Image 1 (cartoon, one colour):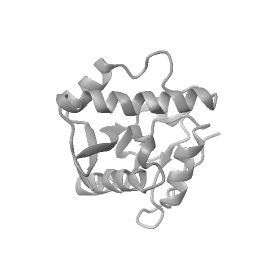
Image 2: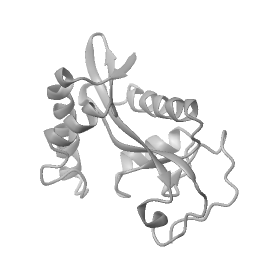
Image 3: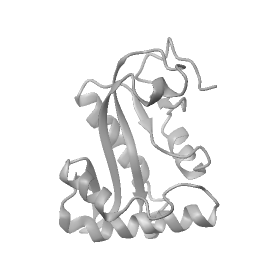
Image 4: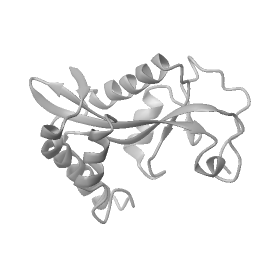
Length: 167
């Protein structure tokens, strides 16, 4: 599998992945990616900012991920000041995998890619922009040895001292 920066020609397939995820969330009554979000315009902005990446297998796009780098403090100090460390972090805004290849490890490879990008930029914190009820994402994170604390980190490679959980 290869991961590359998305281009505007990838937009239709990325939107198909987003629509598959939206249908799943709606069926599972998860209030995420509903009411037309994310729109084509949002995804095009991600692509223009070179923040959207696609996973390619056998010349087909099988997954996508959107990543941004931000400077802490951000996001109301991660809900009412419970996050007490400064520093840069990477946010995973959207991760979607084609229904035809779910369970083939594409999501895990995209998360590994996110970590690799972060570490190359000397960033040791990731944040997921995801709903707490998104059980598939939570399972994927735990499978990859993430600790979910609003800001998520890989305990095997990061120092977790000084963390407080969300209240």
